Length: 107
Image (cartoon, rainbow, N blue to C red; front, side):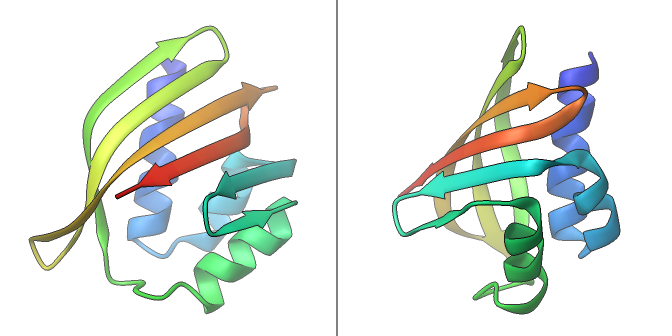
């Protein structure tokens, strides 16, 4: 399924620090909202992930991916060297084959 492949590419880009690939799969109008901050465009999000991410050496382990039309829900864990740091739920919207919006929740 194309949506599941797009999601895997997103998390792979984050985990492997491939910010060019990350930029390619995000819409120019991409936004992310999470409880502690909001990114209003692709450039701000990619810049943060590249330069200011608190712990860039983490990995995303996906527990489930649910797709419906142009929406994708992901549940997973962020780990550092195999140790679980926290769980997350991401809710994506896809437009024109790219990720256009992301709402993130974690605990």
